[in-house]
Length: 135
Image (tube, rainbow, N blue to C red):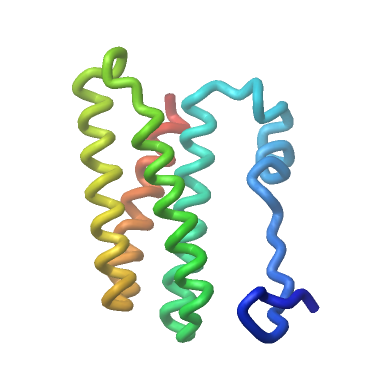
């Protein structure tokens, strides 16, 4: 069993990586995918991570909650910083506002251990993923 740098052994929680999931689902190299498909995939990863956060809160697993929160915040930050405001104009500005609002809401919900608010963010991101897939 692997050990964590700060303490006792922990379960090996390896999950399929994003690249393996992509290849299995899309059947094409990740690097050749159109941007909207990649964004949809990242939104789906966010939906999964938020679901894991809800479960972690409900089961009192603080370490798992923190791990998923870090993943969610990093992806949302990456999505926001990759926006092209010159080309995207008002749409890019609206997406940036949405990503920032989601980050604030998720952090606040995490601090309060509020699975209902995290679930609401998960539903919003699932809708966003569907919109990106439809493009």
